[in-house]
Length: 264
Length: 215
Image (cartoon, rainbow over all chains, first blue to last red; front, side, top):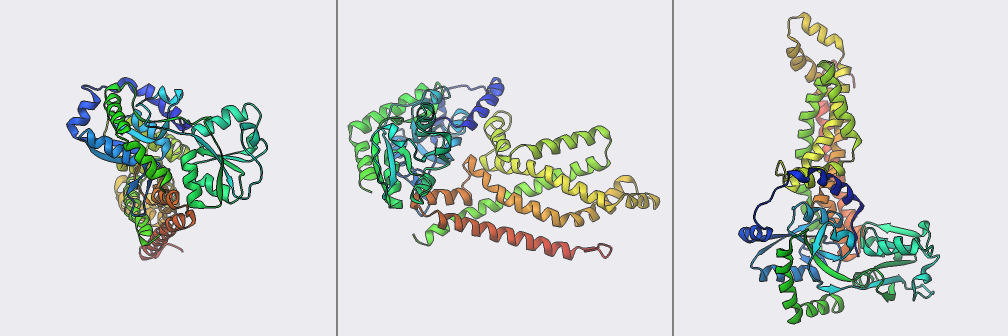
């Protein structure tokens, strides 16, 4: 999903102007180990990856995964909840040490921050209301339909860079929302015809909202999900990669997928 | 969905109130100083305060919030998200409060200053004991408007990860797909806060009204 937010460009320009003032000594990982605490940002409004239960506890695939990673690093995990748009700026400016929030790799993002190895590979899903009678099996099938996406996601990028650019859709047919749950609600209310999201959150919303169905699963814009760390911080990325690899081998990640993506 | 749901959102109320209680007095302090400069100081300080007001009223609070937290904080000063957010809102509010107080000072009238000087008060004494007490009283009704705006703008600190009322409502809306309930609860909380604030200030305005002041 999720690309670099527009607002970030302002932050980036300004930070370039100010970057001469920043000075660091010693490695980031050493500083984290010394403090014994790792501050990890997430946008807890994206079930089943990261969300809150009714007591406000953070739960989800990413949450449990990161908890395990921190535990194996012998660090106390401190969650920082931020809207998705603020996360990359937060990592870049050192407000948080890392972020896990269903981030896909993209070249644009890679210029700002670094990525760990993938911990999960996502797919795109096209979801419609139950009463929908058409068929969607290839991108051209959405021509003339009202399409909703979460703003700043890789799906938004796909709709903008491919479907709009190739003339399959026109600007008045594209609806961009702040959060994924808003897309699902407008779909159910009939204001849009189809929503394009990461598959798993799409399914989660249809389970919660009801009255929706996923009609097309594909890999147009989604892909590997990674934890993001500050630009050039290979030490921290490698430390996490080693643990992610272990968790993969031990089946921990598969079990999480079963728990959150299927067991719901 | 139980009562926990409402409780979780309501817990954000303390943060909403705390942000407001930092931003409003901070804005009042700077706003009053600038209003005095703008009304009584020489030409250049006066122009500088006018430029400050123009700039701070012209940029979106969220942009100032980002600049103060992500760019400035940590380089020259170290502010937590709560303080960076609250102070940014206070800075924006100071420009509006300056305009409110400037108008109030103007409506007290220049005759008061002349009269105060005639009975032997210094310029500063006249401002301190004659003009400010009257201006503050006149400013309460428009200030109560500003107080409600700051109260509601306090939700912007969510962009820095401060879990106030609105962010909690967003999270629960995403969790259980019941936006009407989540945002309804948030709206109710804000309404009660704004209502109480305005009623309190109405009471204060009545209580402190001078006999010479027309309603």
